[in-house]
Amino acid sequence: MLMAIFLGLALGQIDAISEAAAHFILPFLMVMLFGIFLQIPFASLKAAFKNVKVTGLSLLINFVWTPLLAFGLSFLFFRDSPDVFIALIMDMVTPCTDWYLVFTAIAGGYLALSTALLPWNLLMQLILMPLYLFMFAGTMIGIQPYVFLQSFARVLVAPFIIAIVARRLTIYMKGNEWFGKNLLEKIGAFQASFLNLAIIAMFASQGIVLIDNISLVIRLIIPVVLFFIINFSVGQLIGRVLNLSYQEGASLIFTTLARNSPLALTIAVATFPGRPLIPLVLAIESLIELPILFAFSQIMLVIYRRRWWPNIE
Image (tube, rainbow, N blue to C red; front, side, top):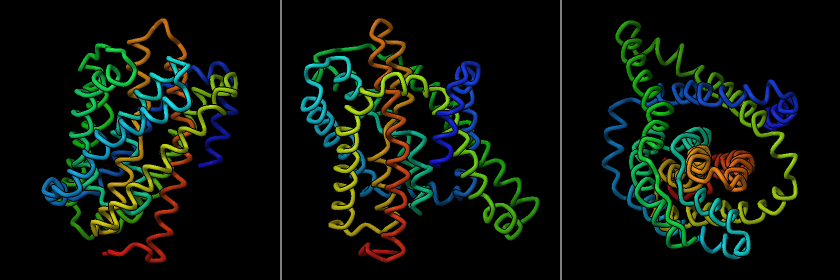
């Protein structure tokens, strides 16, 4: 992953590649998610919707606790920089609807449950982002629902439907044993490859912005890292105190950690065309976020392997 980041930054110094790279992020992301969804039995997905406990905890952390944390960090570090303040609020109050599935899978979390949380994450951020901005930044913006729904359909619905159809057809034609041996056992390498390709494309498309605004990156690192450390600790505490299984705990942690920077960036570009610093901050935050999420996924694996979680299935 670190090699992918540096390769993306290097390629981003070539104008033609930098301009073209942005067009590859979504396709790579869709293929990667197809690999993730292919591993989920449909029966498990239906059962995950019945996990009211984790769903309720996820909604409370994402839409009650996290907005308060976002306001506190933004006010503490950027109360005299309105554009950066607004950008951090936009980013931190929008839970992820794509990347977090990848890191949940890496950490060995409950993928079906995490996927079941997607519609809630999408709907609640669609309704509440203008309210949060009005409350915390004194700014009410109009968000067009089609921006959210179009992103949801392209990045999630399409690969999800294709994966379900492909899974059922393959099992019908080849059987469960062939499917498990020839696809499920090899899908991890496929998924990792497209994750790295998406990272290369993301860093190539934003590399020049990153290097030209290195001082802003340095200022953003502390509040962004604090956000992830605090929310990771909150997820750990709640998961352990409420005796969630390791798989449930990992799912809860990553659905409340990862942020929807690409979607917030799209909204910022459309909503604040005369304030370029807002989308710039969102782009930089997404570059900081990916290595942090990867690091936490590795920490979770260590916790699992050493059985430092009280309820490991």
